[in-house]
Each structure stands twice: as structure tokens, then as C-alpha cells.
Length: 389
Ligand SMILES: [Mn+2]
Image (cartoon, rainbow, N blue to C red):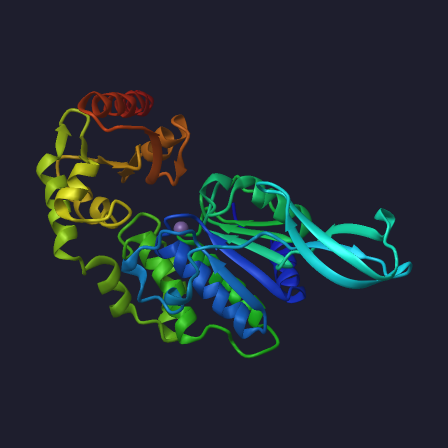
């Protein structure tokens, strides 16, 4: 579904009216998530807004070349102050002190200078939020956000909210949802939104912003190799290169620069790769032990493994990578033609695109567990192939 002009206009109005904006993206952000969040944040800052950008605690060092990456906070404060208001109509405040009664019990002692205070002089309130607009980019479900789903709901009940995304099934609710599944990347949607925000002033598509957005497009199209590399997104990319985006730098950082530890980890994955030749399905696994042996942090090291290497397997049309991480198994799937990846992911509570999707199941990643996940995938594969006949 394409974005309605009135929704886009409404988003621009909300942004223009805001002063202090929180921009968030999904946890374990990829190039589109961080490129979109950082690029949009730069645009908003240039428009005079106070902006906080947050993507959770785990940031991939591979993306540290992005302008603004090093200023990203690793924690976010959403709490507000508690306000205790005391009327001085019946007495004047002399002294204020704190007493600890017992564990987790504090008493605020207010002594009166003239007269006496009564309980009716006290009013308690919650301070206002730090933000007056929240924007989520490139996240499709509340569970992917770097804040709790309840925190998202609380935020959007109090301040205007905007969701900008390009996944097929965006389930995050907001005052304005700009969701376009024909866009190759969230960054592609943001280029036209940035044009709209620049209207009546200078273009906000600076060199840094263009580099952020082109990173999103190149990462989500895998350097224009995926089926989502439409002429539309290539035209947008040309606009970004014209604005000064550094195509060579981004391509090198995204696709052609790996530490030797990461390559050793990939070597383990390749050595273990298995093939179901009849179904043209290949998969491999990486356990926590593999990460430890290669000396790679479990939150890092697999960016590009499935797209740059596993998808090259000539004998397979469908590939999957199972990663054991913090007691869970993350299953990433890719395919070129039929929408297997999205189908399988949906069947197991995950999400994504027709050709690239993911879901997770409980660990640990034993051989039995691996066989169980493979059979889950082949069931969906057989269903799809039967439908195609
Ligand atoms: Mn994306």
C-alpha cells in the first residue's frame, strides 16, 4: 500500500508543530533502521527541533561510519519527575529534610516557619514528558521497539505519534502511520518526507543526511541485488548521490569489510552448511560455542552472511540461518521467487518481507532442535510448492 497524501501532510504538520522529538527504531538495528533514524534526526535538528535518537543498547559497530552514530545514547529515560506541590497560604516553609523510615520508604519532612501545614496543603502530580512527538522508523511490530510495548502505548496516548515503515505487516499503532510496502527501504520513504519538510526553505537533504538514507537503501536492497531494487528506488538513490552521499564508502562498509574474526565465524557456518537437494533448501547454524571459538560477540558478526554468501549457493532457492543467541534461536530466511520467507515467519510468529523474513524459537540449539526447525520450514515449503503446481 502506498502512502496517502493526506497522511504525509498530517505527519509534516505534526513535525512542524513539535519542539522536542523522540526518534526510535527497531532493536538490533540494520543499515536502514539506523540510516533512517539518524538521517531523519539530522533533518529535524536542522529544522530547529531538539531530538533524541534511540535504537536500544546493541549497536552494530559496522555502522559506526554513519554520521551521528557516536552520539547515540545506549540508554533512554522515559521517566518523568514526580511533583509535590505545597501551598504556602497557611504557613511558610522553614526547612526541608529527608528521613529513611525503613527499606524503600522515604519521608520528606517539611517544617513550617510560621503557622502549620496540613495534608490539604499538598498536591501531587506527575511532571510532563520530555518529548512532544514520538516517531518510530523501520520497526513493524511493537515488540521490535527498543522500549516496552506498554511504554509505546503510554507515549502515544499522551503525545502525537508517527510510524514510518515499509514492511508488509506493520502492526504498530500511531496517530499517523506512513506505511508503504512498495518502498524498498524506510529511507526511501524519508527522502520524499524530507523534501516535504524542506518546502518553503532550503533543502534539508545535506551530504550527511543523504549518506544516512543511501545506507538504508543499499542495505535493504543489498546493493540493488534484491528483487526490491525497483527503478523508483534507483531514482531516489541517484538523487541521494547527487546530494553528496558517499556510495563507495557505504558499499565498502556494508558489503566488503569484515574483521578476520567475523570471517572465521562465517567459515564455521559455511563448513556446516547442509542441503535438501530435492526441495532446493539450504541452511546452516551458528551456536554460542561457534561465536566463542571465533572470538565474535553474539550480537555482531552475521550481518551479510546470509545475503552475501548463503544466497550464492547454486543448488538452493531457499536459504536459512539459525543463530543461537541468549538462549533463543533466531531464524533468518531468504528466497528469490515465492514468498516462502514471509509465510514461514508468519506461521511461527515472526515477520518481514516476502523474500526476507525472520522468526525466533526457544533454544538451546541442539541437533534435535535444528531438525525440528528444518521440518517446520519444509512443511511450509511443501505447501507452497503444492500450491504452485
Ligand atoms: Mn528497512
